[in-house]
Image (cartoon, rainbow, N blue to C red; front, side, top):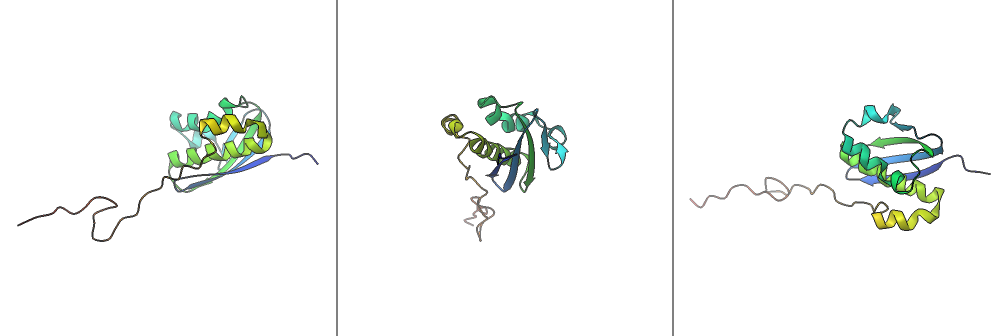
Amino acid sequence: MVQTFFYGTGRRKAATARVFLRPGKGRFIVNKRDLEVHFRRETDKMILKQPLTLTDTVETFDIMVTVRGGGTTGQAGAIKHGISRALLIYNPELRPALKAAGFLTRDSRIKERKKYGQKGARARFQFSKR
């Protein structure tokens, strides 16, 4: 049986994206909305499409994404990670190109927690000697 879609999970900061690639004409649906409606910033749209432009598959797939958590930049990064993983299932020969670009590595940078007795994660309350 031929698989009708390719799936990949992507994560970045507090965002998690479930990405489904189906053969199509290049339509992008994010949370049942058009890409232009969900992501207003051009940089976020550019981040999403990086794995597709790298592998020359921009107009090969219709992409449906469900993304939760985080802000727009974190969600864009999560979708990029998910698309890269789904492309690997579609064609394992794309691995060297995606790996070299760093699209397969989960960006593990997350917000550092606030510590007790301090103003924030690193910031301290002002010290007064007298």
